[in-house]
Amino acid sequence: MTDAVDDDLYARTRALLEPGDIALNGCIVRTDLSGDEEPTLHQATLDVGDVIAEAAGVDPADTYVYSGNDDPDFGVNQHQGRTLDDDAFVWECQQLLREGTYDVVFYYEADADQAAVVEGVETLGFDAVGVEGDH
Image 1 (cartoon, rainbow, N blue to C red):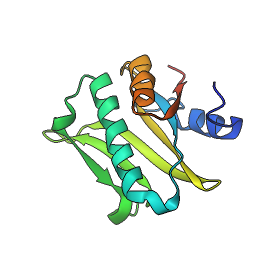
Image 2 (cartoon, one colour):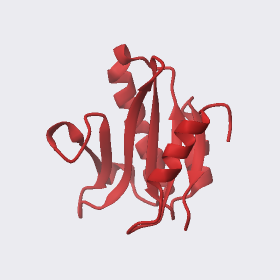
Image 3 (cartoon, rainbow, N blue to C red):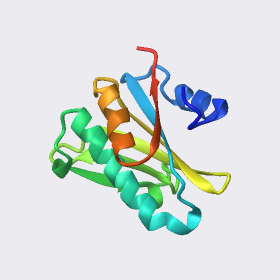
Image 4 (cartoon, rainbow, N blue to C red):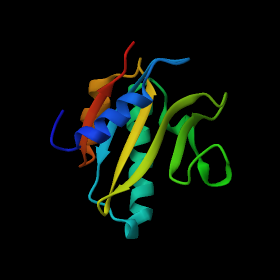
C-alpha cells in the first residue's frame, strides 16, 4: 500500500471485496478534487471506468454509467458501469468526500487486469492503490 490512502479506507475497501457471488478486486483512487469540482469528478469517474472496462476486455464505447440518484438501493455518490447490450456489471464505485477532497473506491470482477487498472489510473494523473479480494 502507498501513502495515497489511510489504513481505514484500505480496510473498508477490502471489506467490500469479501467473497460473494463474484470475485472482486478494487482500486482506491485519491484525487485532489473538492466538493466544488463535481463536474471534474464526474469526468474522472468516467475515465477510470473506461480504464477498468479495457482491463476487463470490454470496449468502453459499449458501456454506460448507471447512477444511484434515482435508485433507493444506491447512494447518491454510487455509480455502476454496465454493458449496453446485456446490462452486465463492469465496475462500481463510491465517491467519498474525505477531509475536503474526494477518494473514489472502485471495485470490479477479479479477472480484470489489476496491474493495468492501477497503471491506467496513474496515467490519468491520480494516485491509485490496488486492493485484491480473497479469491
